[in-house]
Length: 205
Figure 1: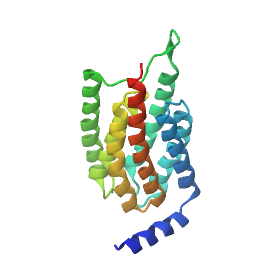
Figure 2: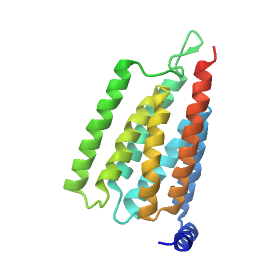
Figure 3: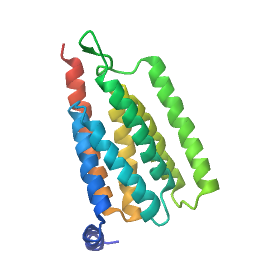
């Protein structure tokens, strides 16, 4: 495709974008912005956004992006868990302050990533008609780890999000979700910014 054709396709898809995709995009961008600011509103905005995204990926995408739909249900569950963690305090201090993973947490994250990548890929090729099983499962498995680390306010969550977003951008473009493609570009920029902002906060006594 030429640059002109890509732009025409992009603008046409934006015009045809359904309200669910607009609402999900706005809410998820707001959620990542609040995450960058270490603000608890990351979770209520994110919960509504990911439930809408799950609906879009399963009922509107053709063929359905099964892994992405299930991934957003996982986002919902982990958002409840993260919301609970982020408000916990002990002696007026957050139970889960911004911090780096220890060796155990890093190893668990790596096992989660490899295990879920293999599991989701197997499920996609055996149980669905997905035509992007490798990338779909890669985005999903990376995001699984990202949400777990974010629920514990771990710096590494931003690194995992950066990787996940880099893969999600061309995947959503290929599927024709132009607004979601734009959303993931913003997510990538916010993830880089979030990493820098959290790193500055963790370095401040």
